[in-house]
Amino acid sequence: MEQFKKSKNKLLVIGIDGGTFDIILPMIHAGRLPNLGRLLSNGAYGTLLSTIPPVTAPAWSSFVMGSNPGQHGVFYFFRKEEKSDGAKSERVLMNLRNIEGIPFWRVLNRYGNKVGLINIPLTYPPDKVDGFMISGMLVPPGANNYTYPPELLSTLDKYYVDVDGLMKQGEWQGKKLIRGNREQFIKNVFQITSNRAHNALTLMKKEPWDFFMVVFTGSDRVCHFFWEDRKTGKSPSSVIEDYYIHLDSIIGKLIDEAGDDTCKIIMSDHGFGPAPTKRINAFTLAKDLGETAFLPGHTFSYLKARLLGKIGIPKRIDPSDLIDVKNSRVFLEPMYANFLGVSINIKDGAENGVATPGREYQDLREKIINHLKKLTDPVSGKCLVEKVYTRESLYHGKFANNAPDIVVQFSYDIKLGFSPLKKALVRTAKDPIRTGDHRREGILIASGRQIRSGSLENEMFIQDVTPTMLYLAGCPIPESYDGRVIKELFGDDYLLQRPPEYYDDSKNPERSLPEERGFDSAKEYEQAKTLLENLGYM
Image (cartoon, rainbow, N blue to C red; front, side, top):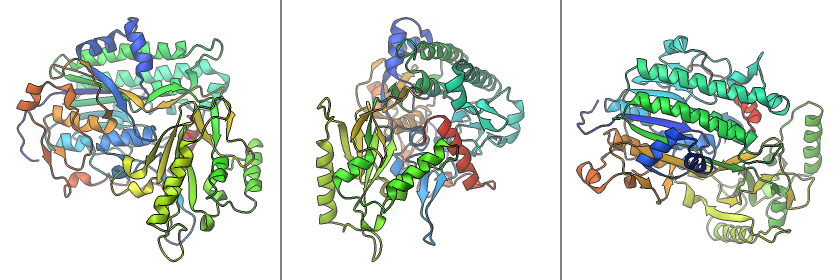
């Protein structure tokens, strides 16, 4: 370990998956969240922008690695990998084995900080930390190797990873409970949250730590399915308010146990709001652009898959399965909810690709952007597009070329769909089950003797939290991190006396990935897909 002497602070970080000020601030002002309220009144707070798309996998990975998806390589829960033999590409589940970069806990460990890490998504398999780690979302069902050290598992009391407590005889119960027994689903989410808090408090008291972090994901689950009360139409519903009151009580116990001298950070990976009520058909949009060719019989193939699904034979069809790749200059790729990717089929050799790099590429991209900016709702006449991004304006790093050439952010009232059977570009499509969905606008609250008080107006991104934590812990920051220290949190004197320091991490062993421990990638992908379908991500 390198010797480094600098003022360091103990840190408690609490993650509220999908946390939003749209819920928190009104409840604080009404006196219903006293513990979050005291952190807010004694510290600094502001909107924390998520990744694009604002989804669990890239967002928490950006936090863990202190960098944008172009550097760590996670744009969704899985990525397509081309086979070298020309066979069809396969989907590979993203987890700690294949996320590129240096996890923040390795930096903390390098400079003498013991860590306690609980339920951070996509941290399976657990890393060999100085301290302890309990992996988060996408641990394979039935796995018993999600803690480090391994013997920690036997000491946990009724602990469940995310919503795997909703399994019965090897079958996910999420969809069934949401449709048929919503009260039981709610009860399970509250109970899993209580159990996680109980185990976190036990470990906080029992184990030595300098940095302690726990993520609560129940907030995301209730916001997806109970944003709107389906009887009264109230939004957010009383279920969500009750959950936040429950979580506030837990946060109070955690911050009290951490002590006054510990700096506290509350953060979310993304925000939340009402689910879309309209759907844009990416198939119709592709037809309108006129740059995508579809295979003969594509409508029949799509209809066949739909019919098989209705009779209980699931056959998921990817839009890319219907495209004539050799004759298409453009591919449309729904990314998540209201985010659409547009990829240009660039020639990369004698056989692959259609559009030539350079002038043809630039002209085509400009034409598509101009077309997208002019899209309007045929009923209201309002513009459908909030923002259009070029790839290089969002991502940089070795994986940036895995991202679409253009990313479109439609209004939050829009969701992307794909259907050759529908001709209209926009149609009404309100989901009676999934009434809430993600927003980019998450939360950041920081409180401690080092932190100034008041609201933060400057733009902050989720990867900025990571170097800020390391700075508070008295650690140099890896130069590969592209997040910034959020200097607005601190007074000028504090920064002057303790300027952030950086180190060259390009050849350091912290970059090595966890050992593979003999896993079946295809099996894990299928298991994770079932969970993600139950949670509404697929």
